[in-house]
Length: 194
Image 1: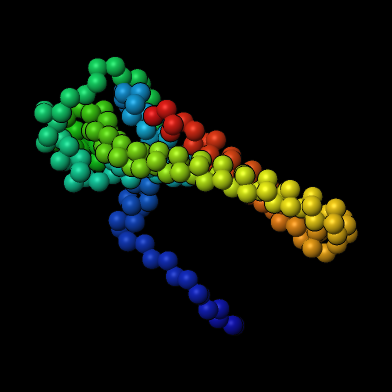
Image 2: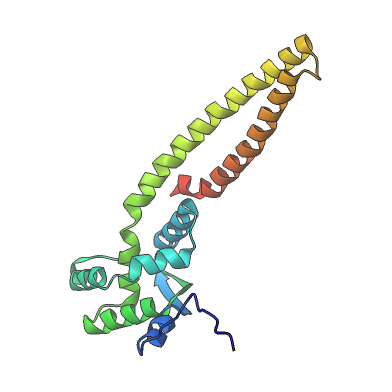
């Protein structure tokens, strides 16, 4: 009988199922300010990641949650709040519940103040969005100039000329890329009003 070699060997410890369980997704509702709800959504789009990933990253750090909970009395929250359901990891929810009960701090406040930490990053992304828009306008103008040059080359060299054909290829490729750039900018437009 021939023995087969195993290339990958998985080893589970007693803690492994608990760690895997911590990665399970759960739905939970928080009452947050519209500004925080918008901030989370806008930054997720700008960074090209899921809201769950960003949310878990912001709220999963127990040390930061403890710091926020300890300083909560001196922090003011907005009165107007909206109920919003998020999908987060079970571990993130358990950390929130633990810190909330240990420091007698509302869970919603912990989340809101955690999200407030990303506001400087949103301002940075907003500035980059403006720069991207300006660069895209310059790129559009450059492509218009190339298009004019192509028409000139076509009239002087003929449509079948190899250089003219390569110029067509440049414009075709550039047009596809420019459409993708504009689609990316369109998705990020919400940041302009933030």
